[in-house]
Length: 316
Ligand code: NAP
Image (cartoon, rainbow, N blue to C red; front, side, top):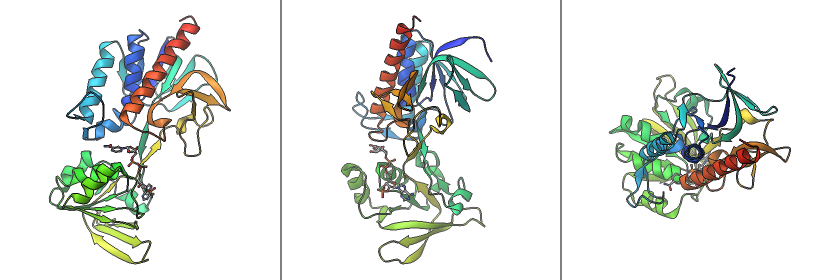
């Protein structure tokens, strides 16, 4: 373990983490940003972001993240590959175990985000990377001239389906209910697209092709008619939401029933309802309601300002 004590460590390099990095770096705390399993977070695997204020024509997600990284490092933020294995928040300075090294820090900003959710079918798990994907932006190109399915009824599913029409001959949008959670504008775009076909009240029972080691189709079940059918296709993309990356804090921080970090006054973390001093959470790991790039950035800013207040109050 190093003797040095960091002023602040930020877990996660998505929109929330990098905004926190910009603010804490400008406050001269030389933040260390641990990039995590999915550097850049969800924006780094999305396409055009049309609703981030300040970009009238929209901006590509990876570019927005790259800009934030440059902005943070310009003021002295340090970015490091790596992720948290475990943390000890029972002693201060807090100890962060990264496997190969342990870092001590006075304050901590948890901005570890949320990761794509899977259906959990054994056949789906066996075929990840062989036709099953949770990232159309990353893998869509491999399905040029082929037929694919997107699972889900929210904005992510709409976005993935629309993106995949660039490559695929046809995109089946499969949703388990009749009604869609997606915003009207996104749903209307999907409905209007000639390559997209909507299948509602339909669940995937099995992904076919495990023996062949590539997706051959889906066995589907209609929950209304109770009919089963097989849909031949080459790829299945998941767009069914995300799981918060907070499991490593179980027992050290209050989490809600779905594993999101519970916060009070926006970004303060608690244990048994009592505030954990100097430990803040921001972005999707604590936000199950808004989950937008701009709200993540906003809460990253709040967490950073609380770090500043904490450091001032403790004479650092
Ligand atoms: P979401 O809104 O939570 O939607 C998840 C969808 O997946 C729901 O339709 C849900 O079905 C379905 N689903 C969940 N678990 C399932 C399962 N096990 N099997 C089958 N279907 C399942 O998540 P999201 O689409 O990722 O969006 C999250 C947030 O990001 C939203 O606030 C959204 O507006 C935002 N977002 C915005 C944009 C954009 O504006 N460009 C793009 C992407 C995301 P039910 O409806 O039946 O629960």
